Length: 230
Image (tube, rainbow, N blue to C red; front, side, top):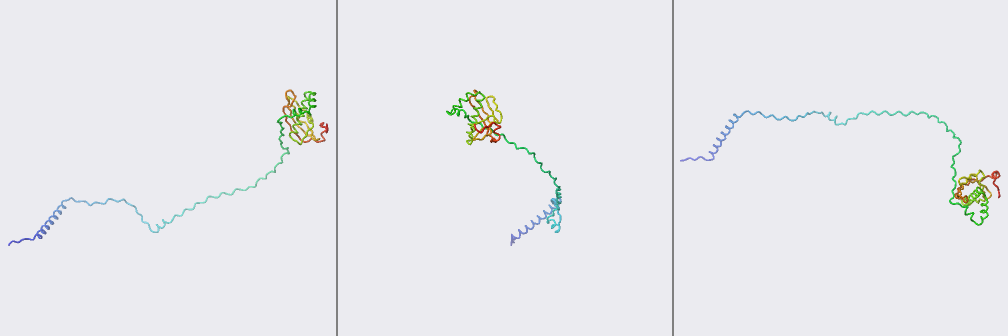
């Protein structure tokens, strides 16, 4: 009678034998391997650690008090000194104010020629022809003065002019200058200054300028040869 082994039991035995052989082989390999030095870990970066107590931490957390800055010294108040007594203003000398000289009035056009051309002036024209040249020029300028004064201000009505009342007349280069003349208006004499320019033939007035002054006091009329009437 044949006996048959169960296949499961045979495989377990072979497995145990194989496992035992594997362990024996590994053990022999470990024996023949060179000794391996244990690996030393790489040094880590060192960090210095300081232990701080709670009191030290609180002291650090509190804000530091700033040291007091010494105040800058205050400047000393300025010394007050008594002002020196000022001398009273000296009175200025009694000098008269400077007054600008009045400007003479320059006539825009002459008027004596028109007056002599009127029919009622026929006798005056005839009388002028009988005078010497210097006297004729003076009478022409006197007529021009009366005409210009009346045209300048209607309140004046001149009826006579004395060219030499206050000063002598001057004639040069066709110009008659009378700085001390006077004219009469409504029975009152007034100071007058004029310059009269004539034409080259001395027959007409070519230019005229004048300046009327204040009234002549009646007490001076006789000394100035200023008649009250003609």
